[in-house]
Image 1 (cartoon, one colour):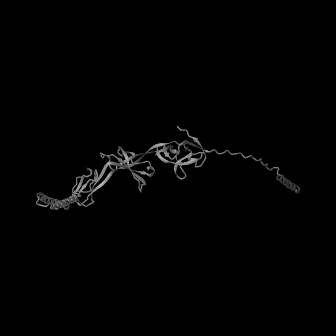
Image 2 (cartoon, rainbow, N blue to C red):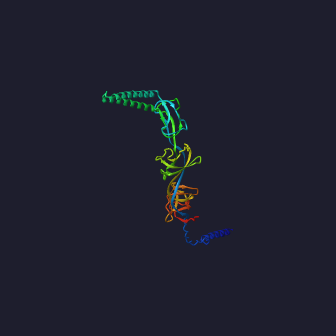
Image 3 (cartoon, rainbow, N blue to C red):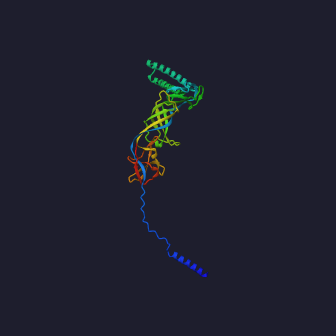
Length: 354
């Protein structure tokens, strides 16, 4: 029994030694030769050559009509309104009487001055007869002549002061407001009537600094009023100073309005025709943004490298736009531009047109 156990132990030891000798060890696989990886192909982009040509531009803006002149006739002297021949809507010409302000003191001064003139005239005429008859030296007539002229000057001054009570239309136009009333006592500077000059009428629009380039005084403009009427106009004024609130510039378009059919304050759509500019037609989808947020396109330069080109909007249409800033013949990326970056090598593929 003891011998059987010893034999079993010896068999186990022999098995372990056999395994350790490497009979069942896995043979090393022969080294595998390195396989060369194929070089990555550049990203394909579709391109179109830039065609640059002069592009006539027009710009449509919303605005309003405005009276060319709006002014208030004021009292130049104190007095009571004794005549007021106008009302709202009255048509007046420059110099027409709008109101008369009477003042007893001014009227009295005129009457007294007139009486003095008449008296001095009689005295002068009498002395002149004596001089002509030889009964008075001619030298004495000079004093009477001077007295007459002095009286006439006083009358003219009194009449001028009285005439300051007459309020005249400062411009030709339509009476818009009449704050004064008959019998009212007014002081110098008090408003009597507001007058609007409606011929020409103005169409006023505001334009941004970016769009201001290309607009000049004398340019043609077309105006469509809210009622559907079309009126031809001309750019008359371009502000040199931006509005502090909106940072826009005022443009006045002059409209002939001899029959005063165009009212003040009417909504108007103004189309300005700008100077032509060299521009390239590109698909709207070709536009992209740089890392700095600038609007532009990506092009493929020499060496098939991607470059970003900023552009300026010239004209915006439904499916495409016209932009400036692209060199003639530049290869514009029209598909794949949002998947590449500046400096990246690409494979440009001309896009079929038609």
